[in-house]
Image (cartoon, rainbow, N blue to C red; front, top):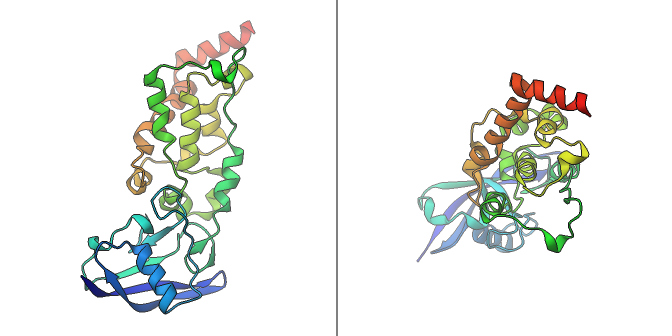
Length: 255
């Protein structure tokens, strides 16, 4: 079974562009990326689109479909009515390179700013031992495919370009939370307080937990509930709890 689908696709580059209308064949069981490929093959041969695995695991084909950040390879055409116009645009939070391809180098720059895992002293890698419960906590965050849809939908990044220098975004705040929860991470022994650094350096305070990042995550990671909110609570405890404040002062005095 097939029908003629109505598509509006953004065409342009860093200098500007516009939405253009196309009528493309849609077959049963197809996803948006299938139709974009058919459009590229039959009508818009120079259409730029980034993709790789077409299996929802590489995170390459991120775009906005009818205004919602999605993976095109995981967005089935069956969710749209046959007479509905499907609008495909590049991720709004990042500079456009061409057509549906954006410059996501912002995210790689933020990744380099996150201090890496600090191995426990006296243990070789093969000697690490963790309780299964602790493995499960961090395993959820390791499902991230770095599609950057959470970064795109976060209004702190999306609507306020001036925040980018001071805000890592949900994907990388989640990475800090993962390391802060890790039972073998020895960052504290080197003087690195990950939760406090998340607040003071990486902009955790900008997040107002609207959960929009969680809503668009294709891996269904509970970014807000399981990473950002717990880290905000730990940060608040360390910064504002009078007993914690007093303990920090006594500990430093003993040192």
